[in-house]
Length: 143
Image (cartoon, rainbow, N blue to C red):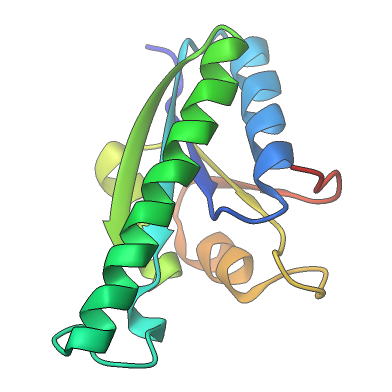
């Protein structure tokens, strides 16, 4: 059975590099399908999601997530890979680790950071907590 790859995308500047690396790794390993995972950080809302303001923010984040996943799937499909979109809400690290564990991913790919730091908190957390392989993609952050 070919390895299972999960590419976690955030809608940030590292997504292009993550998807290119997922394609490269898939081609090397003979993988025909990559799962593209996007997590909406519903824990970071400035208003509780059960308030009108919080609910509106969460709806906007979900709509943005749909666009991020659709764009990511198009990129991988244009390269000849089947891409399966997946969506989660919650704390990004916990959701990525949980999803990848349930999917029995052999490799989780994610960007090093969407901010100015060389290695962001989500990448550090996933690398520390996921029992399988984690490929943290650095550089090449152009969309």
